[in-house]
Structure formats: structure tokens, C-alpha cells
Length: 168
Picture 1 (tube, helix red, strand yellow):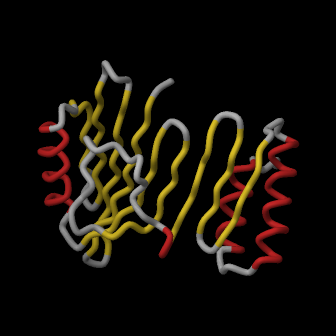
Picture 2 (picture 1 turned 180 degrees about the horizontal axis):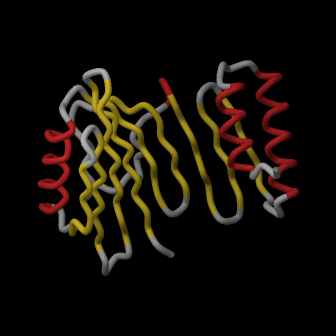
């Protein structure tokens, strides 16, 4: 089965995220070769718990652990849940994916998002509660933007997977 460069990149980040320079360089070369096989020209930069891929389409970055921070370009009209810990971030030209964690319940987190997103002009277009997990979706149709939230609760913590996308 052919691995795409993103799969190889994520695996490399997991395997080589410990900050060793030689393995990082090897991993960068492997990812760049796979990208070239897939017809994508670009460069890769791996560092401790972070990776950046630069192509003509733009820059993609992945960060975890101590490097995981809310990107400066994250939209101000999307709620950044107060008190949540940022576990990982992915930034691509058309959006963001953040994984957050909080000790608040799913219901408390969901209510916070519903209220703030509505206040910021977002329309809710889907809500699914499956006992222990919840999916919320919002959109700004005229701006062709969407926000998807996947909330799960385990061991007294709620994990929030927050995806923000801008259509081309």
C-alpha cells in the first residue's frame, strides 16, 4: 500500500520527535522523497515535537507537546476554550486542527461553544450526542468557513478536537 507524504510525515514526527539531529535529517529526506514521488515539490523541517512542510500551495505545520500552541493566525471568531490545554496543532493553508483537553464536562464545553459561536455569527448546522461523545458543526455560509468539534470524555477529562476550514 502506497503511503502518502502526510502519513509518512506524521509517522516521522512520532518516531523522531525527540530532538536528535541525525534522525531528523534522515526523516526529512524520506518525507521529501515521498513527496516527490507523489508529484509534490517542497521542503520539510523536523524539530523536537514539530514539523513544517513548505510547498507552492503553502505551509503546513504540526506541533505537539511543549510546541503545541494556538497559532497566531487562528481565527478570533472561533472560541478558544478557556482553561483548556493545547495538546497538538496542525495548520494547513485552508485551516487548522487543534486537540485540546479540559477537566470540564462535555455538556459544559458544548454549551460554551454553542453560546460563543452563535454570539460570533456562526450558525449551528449539526449536533449529535452519542453518550460519552458529541459532535457539533458550525458554519459561516457566506464566508465559506466551517468549524467541526468532536468532544469525547474519558477519565474525568474532555478532549476537544477542533477543526476550522476555509473553502477555496
